[in-house]
Length: 153
DNA sequence: TTTATGATTGTTCCC
DNA sequence: GGGAACAATCATAAA
Image (cartoon, rainbow, N blue to C red; front, top):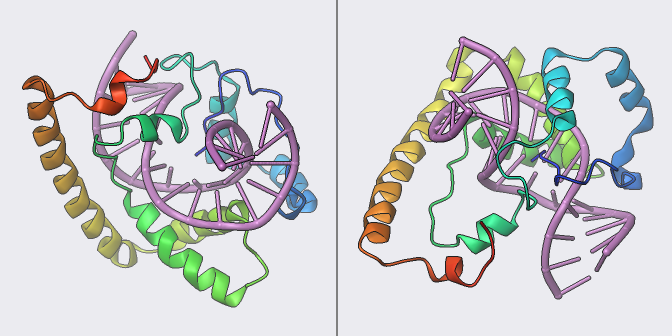
């Protein structure tokens, strides 16, 4: 995702394969509302999790905790990525794929999206069930061992 | 070797 | 209600 570590405002130089200079300029010139929202988000100070970076580490630390299920868009992205890489094997950068996928998603009709919504709904229900069980176990004192050996708080 | 980054949208949760 | 966080993916660079 996209969230930066709290003090990572100094962004690391983009990798050569991913930098895509010209498209970048176009982006800057014509920003979609989502892009505006995103860049605004990136500039804002994180309010919730002030200390650690949000990516990957918390997931590892809470290995037993059910993960948030992917949204419909993410299931579509998975399909889209496979097709895209078949047609464009030289493109491996997820930035490009994600951007293209987002544009495609906006042009799709509800009928085209509905199968992905269905999958996402099922997975979300499963997630809720797992969370319920997880919370029960936590209440019974069966704490996740991975939480104990970390200063993640 | 490990971890952050970027690009996307939808969902959830907190204030 | 608004907005932040986070879910997957993966090449790449930095620590």
